[in-house]
Image (cartoon, rainbow, N blue to C red):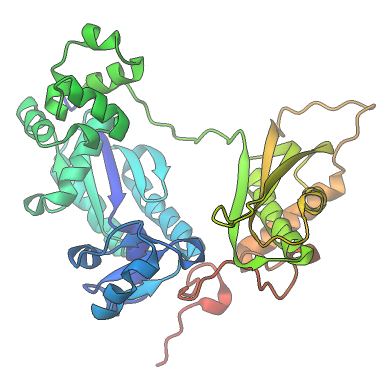
Length: 424
């Protein structure tokens, strides 16, 4: 195992992130059970530790546990993604003060290469944890080790073992052995349930056993990825930080309707909204699209299930919302059939090219400069005043089909109208 002073990875993971975000502007709910629901308020996707202690299951349909929610007076929220995304970016901003390098792994997880890798790592972990609580009011756990896989396991221990006070540092072989012996094979980053079953059949039941296995023997049965995982469990770093996330090769936006659509108008409006969201993501990564994929479907539980899709070629590579929306609506109109109750539609940008390196010629049509300027104005207004402040008329005004969000909290940090007010 390499000395920890050579390479240090810290994984900072927000605790019950969605539920914690809802408690930031509702401090009266701290210490009380809170759950957050999925799109259309269908499933439970996040629980505070108090809700977990009451036995509220994860990814459970709300109607199955409605009696428990009422019985224990659990506060319920609809998903508020603009709020969660903004608070996530604030966590990252705070961590940049302590990071030589940084990788945003997910909305609630950040890998950090600390500046002071040879100092008191336990104290550094507490410093990062305290700074995030002070600046953002989000509780986190911190795991530190000489590889990303070990840091993942250390973070898990930091959250589950109260004596560690939410910070776990693996700095020598004794600590590494202690950590691996307490981690089931499925707990290892990159293993999962299916691979875990195969390894258990070979007598490998925990992380310690996997770290001690003969790599050459295992290589004949599994991929090189598992070999890297074993190296990482032994403290040898094989995975580097991705400071700039790679651009997506495809961008999809798809959601279920709040109410089933039986006419064409709501289907077209929903398709326009999803195409708009996809186009915004496309512009953020500085790409253009040449081909769209549009699909439309009823509930899979309907007696006469209907699901169809089509692809549409755009006249030239573009990131113009107007052009993308118009093409997506043509596709949706083509797929629509009378007599069905449609539950879901989606728009995918499937043939994407980098805007920076696109080379056009005088014989090929290209996106006009005025379109680029208009999209920049739209994006700047929506960034400043909130999503959909400026949008295409094709999205409609009264969106009866819109996603159900009966318990949605205000967008405290991304909408001027929802800014918290203080009366003195």
